[in-house]
Image 1 (cartoon, rainbow, N blue to C red):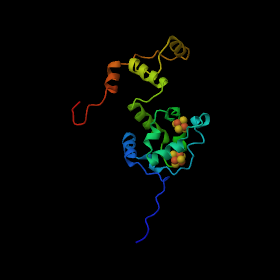
Image 2: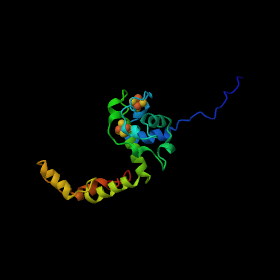
Image 3: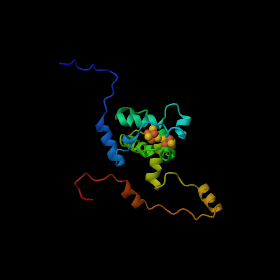
Image 4: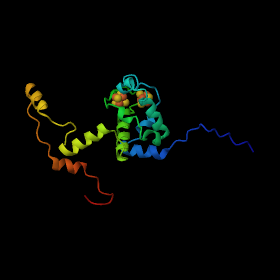
Length: 171
Ligand code: SF4
Ligand code: SF4
């Protein structure tokens, strides 16, 4: 009988459960098409200004299913500006930014987000806008010949942001 192959400590075991969880959020297993070419990195503003942020590395961790690293308290995900440059550059239509947005949503579900994001959430819940309005905004709009901003119907917004009912329950 042949010898058992030697087990190596540095072999990464893919966590398919995490990959499935992410694929459900993003409606598809987009990252599985990533062949690690690095085209998404060249024009990424977050990579330019960060020592730790790299969309190719994020996609590699997604391929391995390293959920604990991607969704840790010190996650780099919030450094992404959502500029979509990586989306335009990726030859595989991985849509790295969409994967990262889903990871941000998973972080938020776990209550992990920085203070500035918490402020945006609070402003949105209170006003239906992500940026507070001010007299200066009204004046600038007037200067550019734009009409005043309309009031956001908060009753409709609260319906949109209220948690979905458990599966099987009617709305
Ligand atoms: S969307 Fe995020 S990851 Fe993609 S290029 Fe912009 S900052 Fe980088
Ligand atoms: S450009 Fe697309 S295929 Fe290339 S490393 Fe980035 S995500 Fe992967």
